Image (tube, rainbow, N blue to C red; front, side, top):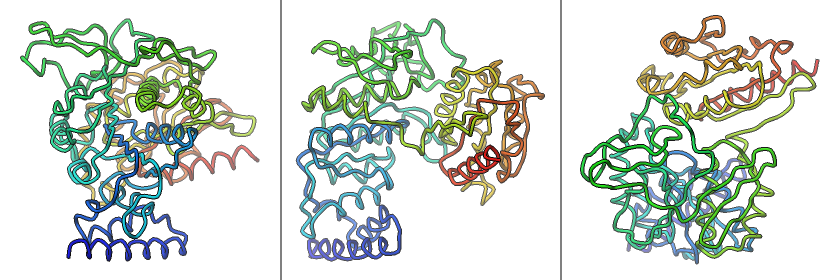
Length: 456
């Protein structure tokens, strides 16, 4: 009877997907909702592809899964992924069913699936991945993810013992997930060790998870990402199997060293967060046996997905950089602030859309995350003007005042629309729009408005 429900769910979901596509819709989520509504254990009956890889963690899932997919395709694999859909249960189900026959047999040789950490309990027990890449476990939206111990508990409970884990050796929290999995590969970044710790407010781990002793820092890049050792029991960051040993920003390359030796790849983006993402990709791809040429081809032709990062000219007047700054995620936004402060340029103007649109509809946004967010990089002399737009702009004003940012450098406006008109294109040559996930449409509307002004 249950198998009949599966066949019925598969048929209805595929018909729905066809109808949505005829209407010009994406069909990357709703078919999964329909299938799971009819048969809650729908994914149990889907047959696995030859190779099933899942990517999880707080930050970097989309970038990592896209580069893994690109490399596999370069190597001749046919690949299923959910890069255009959702990473929760329904989105995963939609990606899998749309690439399966009516009987549940997978059409492609491999699948690379991005999985939200909270959805792990509803995904991994059914699809049982061969490999799981976890880039990091960090402070995230307090409404959804509570704290890192909560997320670590969910991942540990959900991940099957048979999965091989690709883990960030410089993140002592993600290193500890799923101890039942004995096949563990570690990656990290040794190049450009920081001489001093940045003034980050959010610290997700201070004491040893084994004995409670104080963790001594060899060095910290940001938040808790770095190398540590317990002062009492000797527990320490694990040795890396794959390590970035050189970052050549001038020639746009980075070098990864493993037991095979050192290999050089194109540096698609020089944000240290993405360097970690790239190293995780390479660790996974070399572990499954991909050749250097196929991996290198993915980086030579790859780019950060445009919904995350894009740089373009505004006529002959200015250069515009648009960067996703995930609202309610203090570490992610702090890293964006830090990155912008360190990019070349002496007179930058920032337009910031980091409100939470969905929360503002109901006026229930919890602004406590702003007090975990590090505003210090915005004091950099290279930043000449910051325009904070959105209903929570006065909360942003308070945080700027608490950080000691000069009032002369800031503007606060409650409306997102037409906020780009406050940018003086004759004065600022380096313009940045930083936007939350749910404000992409508004951000790209202002991008279009800036282009229109520059074309006159």
